[in-house]
Length: 397
Image (cartoon, rainbow, N blue to C red; front, side, top):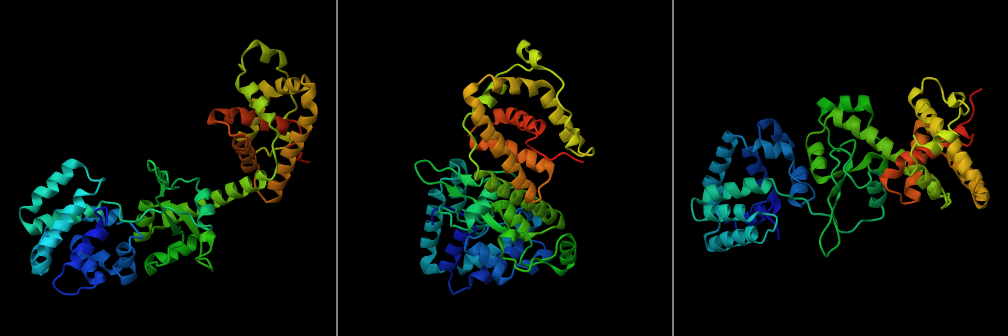
């Protein structure tokens, strides 16, 4: 045991109890003192085991409820009346010594907090254990992941290694060591749902035939996962469904586009555009009236039409002239144009909409060339050029 948390604290209590007590009973009795009665039905053996085995952090709802003055008093009474008297007298010194050592060796606890807890240890034992327990609820309880299995990697990639709900990184760097992964593979449609909200969930999207299928799983940070599974709501459920759908598309698009090699010289085009002043003399010489792209994009897709037109009004002829002046580039350009068109056709065949295809192609250019985010606008302009140049999107009859 290297850190203080819900599991390590209760394990010490259990190991030094005067008689054998099941972890389930110990955990349930203590949690009942700090939570409202409406929560008690959730404390099943299976639910409690997830915290005892360090597979889940304590949810925010429980941590917040423990700060209520009446519940803190009830918790203090429980430790004073039941826990302190029932610590085995023969093992009492060992118990408090090991608890003190656990606190001292926990690098995540500030020196000031350690000193505060150690000071309490010399006073009222009930108050001391209560304060340590309540503090342990706020600590990371779930064990971090140090090695990813084959099935986990695609799920982590789908969310771009960030929690889709709170956007925190799911990877915790560790100095001079391998990183620790702080996420939980979470069922979008929860395993256990109260009948009062199951109907609402089913109205959004019915329970999948196979709840263990990857389509019903998403990577969330340990905190968001714990909070959602403790108190699943239709609002978050709906949000997770949409996030999963979007992540599947982005993953499919990336897989599709990864097949095609983008010529290295596309970087030269992007750099040239990025380094060019759109209001400079050079651009003004090439500013003409290119073909209107509205023949390819439905009128109701105004924003995409406008963004493509804006790009091409400034850069279309500049790019075309820039390419035409590079004799050694002409053959490569044909290959690039072919790759872009092939990628577009594959994405369209997969049923993706024009906005999704456009953004996927922009992201593809960025990622394939390991370009920084500052190149995204340039990539956007290049794809606009291909739309204008009849490589992307079929003409509407």
